[in-house]
Image (cartoon, rainbow, N blue to C red):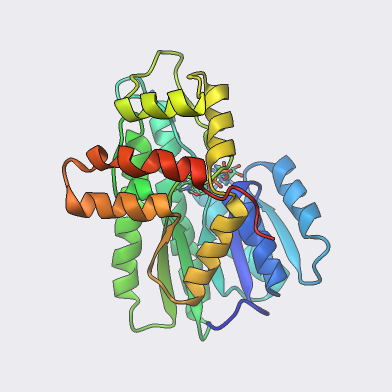
Length: 295
Ligand SMILES: NC(=O)c1ccc[n+]([C@@H]2O[C@H](COP(=O)([O-])OP(=O)(O)OC[C@H]3O[C@@H](n4cnc5c(N)ncnc54)[C@H](O)[C@@H]3O)[C@@H](O)[C@H]2O)c1
């Protein structure tokens, strides 16, 4: 695929963050989009932003963890657009808690959204994508699909799982018209931390968090953590730009941000002790990173 012009892209989680900016940049590139989210209010905001572009936008309120709605989505999108070329499996959530303090309900919420959501939508759209000359499936994993930290066990299960699923599927479909891409972002300044679930119990703070907290004046309440997360991450428009460039270059594994690339390198160098290397680069990257939107 040389460009996104005249393509039809389905984007889940398009009501916020990376998904919203994928939709904006795809429309700028001349694509039509089917924007999907569980949150009607924020999805309408995205739709309003997209109004200035000429190509078609359709809006779909769906819960990606609900099989009934993921099974119905292809026919809804085909009714609106007549075809589908690209599926961005982007919707995601997290829980910020130890395994012991994570309720079964919250555990299932993360697994069903991040992992089963991607699997169900891939299953639902494969027959449609097979009909095209060239088609793409882009799955959002994370750098947390490469390395693990405490208090994110449910998220890690899903993001390591998405990576395994994507790489296996990519090999299965190697000689077909469909290419599969797996995305591993580092820290992107979105609403994911604000929307995270967590218990009121105090969390253990590791030495790196202590250093980061001291230099960046991060508090420990969820509001303080999510403000820091949004303020100090890469702007989601830059993340979307990197993802789309990687897809057009046909990269099967797309790292987003220097933090993600260096964390991946750390786990290759020190497979069981990679976190020892993080203090050398995470704080300077966080302070120096360009946090502005593209353009
Ligand atoms: N922000 C980061 O630092 C970061 C890093 C690595 C990976 N990611 C991944 O990027 C993807 C996008 O996240 P983001 O950072 O833009 O977060 P975000 O919270 O800003 O956006 C996520 C969107 O997904 C939607 N969503 C949640 N559950 C849903 C469901 N069941 N059905 C449909 N939509 C649902 C939300 O309403 C929201 O609009 C996620 O898969 C996330 O895990 C983010």
